[in-house]
Amino acid sequence: MALAAHPERCAASNASRTSKVSASSPTLDPFQLASAEMVSNPYPVYHRLRAEAPVYWSDAWNGWVVTRYDDVHGVLLDQRFSSARTSAILEHLPESAQNDLKFIRRYMSLLISTIDDPEHARQRTVALKALAPRLFEAMRPQIQPEAALLSREAIGLARSNRSNTEVKTQ
Image 1 (spheres, rainbow, N blue to C red):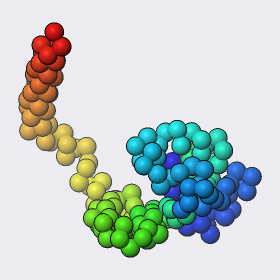
Image 2: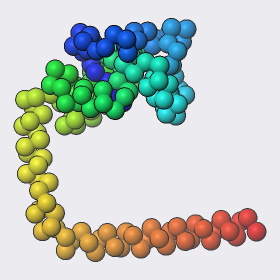
Image 3: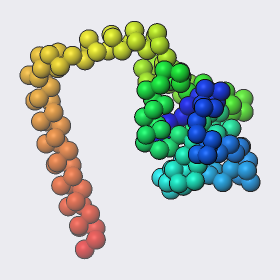
């Protein structure tokens, strides 16, 4: 699923596959995108959206919700769409909710995937240099023993939890 934050740029979407229904009211939003059920288990809603409205305007999310793989792929590759989706969603919420979610806005503003060019390109260049495979290979002597230790501890914890469960159920 993708959220295209600029509806005027999404208007070129195939009209026969587009639904513009408000998500701010349960009576107007058959998909209940802002509901607790959607948050706890979004997959049935995603399935319905793909079948009934693969390109869907959401007032609650302040953007087009795009749910089919080929459409999502196209949106993600199309430079006309913004990656800075967080503000578009949060700015549409009531002020009290915006205040409660300030930390999310700050966190999301730091993610490369939610920043548009040219800042995205600058940060990506820096990140790729820092994440070069040769650097990880050079750190192998420090990483491998730590990973092995953590794996042994996790296996021991899992065995201990299994033993405790078996004792309690007997």
